[in-house]
Image (cartoon, rainbow, N blue to C red; front, side, top):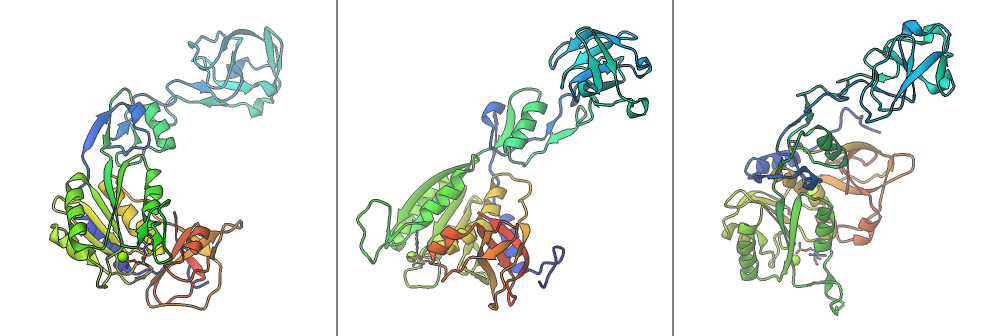
Length: 402
Ligand code: AMP
Ligand code: MG
């Protein structure tokens, strides 16, 4: 293995291209909505804790709340019960309160002794723990130990995924909450040869897989709205469709027709509709002809090359981060780094996205592929790694799961 987790070489042209385009894009606006409807959306405000967490001292265990001085081996009368959600009660000297996990610990108690460490009867309890095992605060979750009132609990620009939605529901005092508007994405698949499922098909025609790939990978996101259309390799028709979709979209994702062939009309069509090209062709495989542009009002326009592996890889590596930026994400989630253990003698003078599978040992192995049209290999892969130019495959690389 030639590299380490801390030193992974990479071609800066990829990050630079993404950064340059990002700076031209318009981030979507904001909406105030009830929090109950905000699951899966991107927060457009900081959520500050409206009260301490926990908001009072509560028990971490089922047991007995006591004063340490009262623990002299004698049985203490149990003077009350504190279940989760019950009103706090007082602990009188030389007595105990039965508490349950999450129940309020009486202000006068110094610790909670677990049931397992007690001898219990209906009305009395004696603690069997040695004195040196008991300390102040034992088994108590202290008021404010997680978060204090007014502290940042869920930051702006983050996705309200299940974990943060739970946090928002805990810490936001009341409706509404401010979220970024959904990103309106238009998927446009170009190609005379494309047919959807169900249509009678000739051997020289192909099933559209790029439309379904993009739809599938985007539908899991609550923060986008997708529309999909298909167009023939006809320059006027492509231009008309782009013109029609631009005012209705924050993002235009085109596939096919973006390289240098005679029927590759997409680059001209984008420019004829007022799109400004920021990059066209990046030294990568697959996906080299990728085109990045922005529209008249800062829309993201991406021309992804038509081959199925090119679309999969360039969407995940380029488009997702850019779309997240448009959607209000403060940061893009960096790719995790993973060990590719397959030894392979091939190298190319381009950044090489190689399909990989996750193995049970937590490492990655290469998925053999015959090229960017080999959709059967795509089916086998959990994602891909990014290997810099002129480098052998085995090593530690950024790993992009779908
Ligand atoms: P293009 O970039 O338009 O030259 O397309 C490159 C290759 O990808 C050609 O073999 C196309 O048939 C194929 N291709 C283009 N669009 C799609 C699509 N939507 N689904 C599957 N394959 C496609
Ligand atoms: Mg084509």
